[in-house]
Image (cartoon, rainbow, N blue to C red):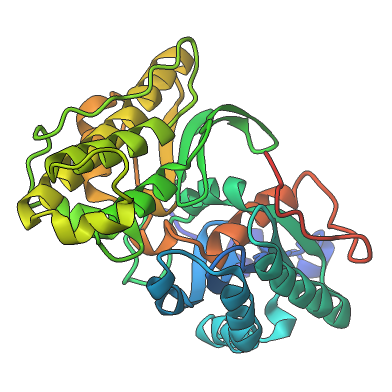
Length: 383
């Protein structure tokens, strides 16, 4: 026989309800911390709103790449002027896309180094002005460290392909771009060490320089990847730097080896300037050199990453920076590493404000906001 109480009288009889202690119901509100991140270290002017370090609400980017193509690399003065022209509308676009007003923003964050001095200055001055005028806390962010945190963004617009969950700690991070090649062991959010770095050229810089030798457009990474599809990666035997007992990288020797191979391929000696090569090399030679260089450079990265993963046994591995968008790199990592790698969206591999905002959220748990009066750029900032 089922017994149920449907009314207070059935439950308590004739006892007056006022005789019982009052039951208070409390409503708990979970505060969502929304941070506006600003990034302007190179040629991208970027701003984004990220919630609690993991939910992407907006990601606005304006690139001055087209202005630099004719020069085969970033021209600092042109980049800085472009930042000046677009930074205000980019920030407003980020707010509009996130459906936020300034009242919805809890803090701001900005890259203060490393990077191009003029470019950094535009972002930092803008962020300081906003933080002071709106009375918002401001967090100064290291650009290289921020690339790690692009991988902590796990939800956002449907157009983004994001990891299902944030990477587990401790993690091993390979940061590879036009200006940086770093291998970082992150034990906790406030405890990391750089275990490897390039001794000369960054890998992305090497891609740019080799692309220029072959007469391929800037930036070099995508151009070489496209050309390499047509080539034979075994056509030219190129050296890999052997750095004993180290997780460091070196690409200067590889770049020189490509130059010598190209000079020999067209029947010339070392006195032939690299600027003359594009007209002398055949399309087949260009494709084979691109494929051979790409295979060797990526093999060097993955060899070192694999060694570090074996030695440190991290819970997860992440790859960040513009070169992380390379599909050949992703395929090689997948075949070589036992620890699975979840990649962030290609749009978050290159410079963006979302990675800046995500890192700022984790920093806000352990450090105080930056002093607006003393914060300055640091173009040579190290980790």
